[in-house]
Image (cartoon, rainbow, N blue to C red; front, side, top):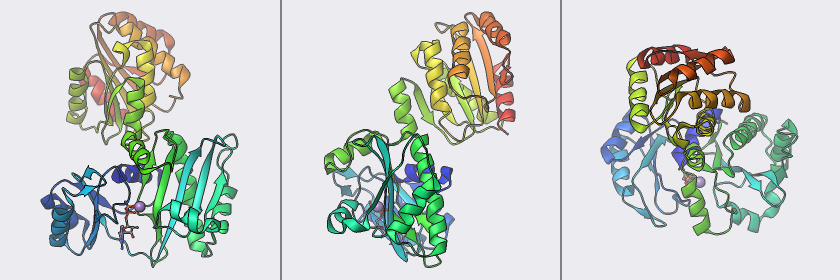
Length: 378
Ligand code: GDP
Ligand code: MN
């Protein structure tokens, strides 16, 4: 949904407005109070065209935000009932542009599209004024080059130097987000320019599904459903139970109960868990590699805590999986705290010790492990 896409934008440094989630009119009022000034109340549903359907409304003050929230909650937008709202600081709009990057399956290359005629549906621009829509492929083997941004900007006819500079930075960051999250589509419509000349993303669409794009609305909708959270979708494909949280300590346990208490203990010792992850594959080496691949895709993660209590899961298998992941993924920037207990834990610890990896930190108890992981995340 929009707010999740915006969270990813915020993380890669694409400017977005300050906002909060709300599920009731009272929460919307409180969000508006916290944000201050006029806000926009936006339906969070997995479909576009919310503006036209009455799902996006400006509110002058917290009271008005409560009233607008009351109007929008429960609305049916293209078959999606509104249960969540995104309340964000309202922007003044001078211009509305459009910027996207998709994977062009025909050319097997990412494709940027940019136009200064944003705000309306891009299909309509493509039909009515195709010359205003700049299309540009990126050669994946060359990666991103600054001239890509310049061609889009000059081709689109952006003349203001301040805008040019900001858009160039956004183009580069959007490409980074696209590759980092294995997206099929990252779209900003509208990408606005405020009267002060500030460029920012007013909407976001982030898709990791591989349905063909721009086919028709029902496919677009399915594609958005699958895209709710790119990381969670990726985890599901890998058979890893994964829930994204908001902190810096990546957590990996075996069994839902242990994973959950690990999340609690990390929070208890003053850390912020980045996720809740229950090992896939019953904790075999392959499952460990998959879990680490998921966790390290979260750019917020600073340290990783493995808390394993071996029952059916064998600690030596987990240890092998961790070493295998170190071989296969670039894990050098992550300190990894490992607490192994239960079946074959002595063997597991020995395997790790023999490997002599400097970023692996063994700990004997859950509490000490949590403390260490929190300390290393700083
Ligand atoms: P969509 O209709 O689902 O694509 O939702 P958008 O997030 O794109 O919002 C629809 C329209 O609402 C935008 O094109 C803007 O014209 C308008 N809008 C959204 N946020 C703001 C805002 O902060 N200020 C103003 N003035 N208009 C906004
Ligand atoms: Mn939009």
